[in-house]
Image (cartoon, rainbow, N blue to C red; front, side, top):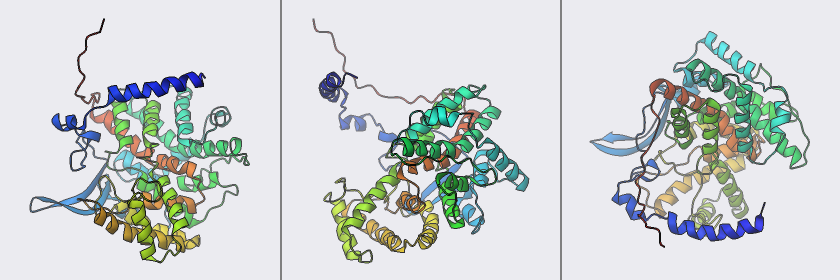
Length: 446
């Protein structure tokens, strides 16, 4: 690469781009443009209809919109009730995946058939791990997975077929293959780039998705029932979220163009990996490491509040003035996923002897919303979201940070698949939003 020449050009080009690509903020108001497809209250602009999931965060009282505890539904079932129905031991990722994709809960025979299909598909083409995944190892596991997804299209004789039957087959195969793409991608990076030992385990067809994930990741292949249950719950809670999130919208946009399943899911992956979307829990973990370094007594709420105030005032941590894991674009009083997840986190913290850390999280959860409300103008309320705890869970499970967003993808591909199928069935029109041009006409100077 012409590094010196390129750096010189880029420095000059940046100034030119800043001059010619900047748009005055007043123009967005003047033309009624909703930045980020959100109105002035932060509500998403309606761009479609779905029967897959729903989110609520407010209620109407005397015609007024009032903040309320958040709720999340999958196919008409409240997620909290779905997870509660599984009891203390049942692992439900596969059952809930069937619900999201098919629109109804499976009976025992249908569940067994679906789990059998997932187990049979939980494999990769001959030499794929060696020739594709290990060929160019990278710390960015999401990029590694995306490359693998696009390459898998070359092994599919019907890659371009967008019939519902074929897309269902492709989605089921990708749901099964995602844990392998993620874990093998990490092991390749860990071996070639970090000089660690290499071990590649084969998946066990008798294990669930969560169990296989833990088994594939660990040298000794061992895990506890509590570990599997907590990870399974995390996967269910990350599986789908209302349809309006960035990566799911990407899925529907690319699907509407007539593109194939592999390209569509690769596009969704590229969307999810952004730190404003799927990478949020990594920022929480970095913040928590910083808090541990500066707060000496995890039970001293005054000390915790004082340091959180410094973070909010841009005097500590990354200087952005944000307490990560607090607040959500949709939820106000509470994130239902966080409420469900918290109990499982506490149980895992007890098993891992991390109750001191758990108290720190609980104290921050209590203090931060009040502090934010006092220091900032928050109209819809603020509460911890699921990202506040998910990174802590993954850390306790011994999952490296390079895999945090990949695990999100292992769950969310179920939602993407459901939305792709719904888009194919319900609409036959390419999604084409409008942009108002504010370009000034010019004449060439001679």
